[in-house]
Length: 146
Image (cartoon, rainbow, N blue to C red):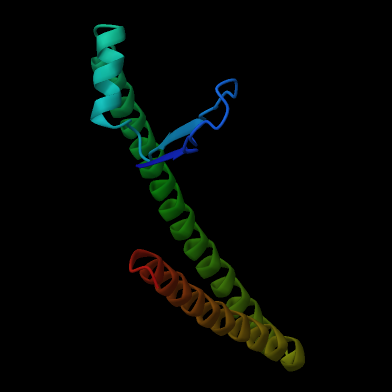
């Protein structure tokens, strides 16, 4: 919360007919779900029961945000597991197909399918590990203000 008060000092009048004007400006800022306690007290004074309503509104908003975050984490986890399962099925299918190609004498096709699948899996693993590490490092830097 910060308060800024600006005012222009008055000068002594040289002429009794001169008028001095004093201007002032005040601003109040705060961050977070709730206004400062002094502001809540003023709300309560103007409208009895409003402080309780403001607190309930903040609690409901926090609960709503936490539910959304929980659903997002659960969905992300499920999607990640599903991706790993499908990658496993595709890799096994490709390896079986390359084995069939080898058995039928199609060594070039079998080798291409086997090699392509293996390279794809290794690339995906390396990229996933690198991006996970970068994400963790960014979160750490953000949390520690660096």
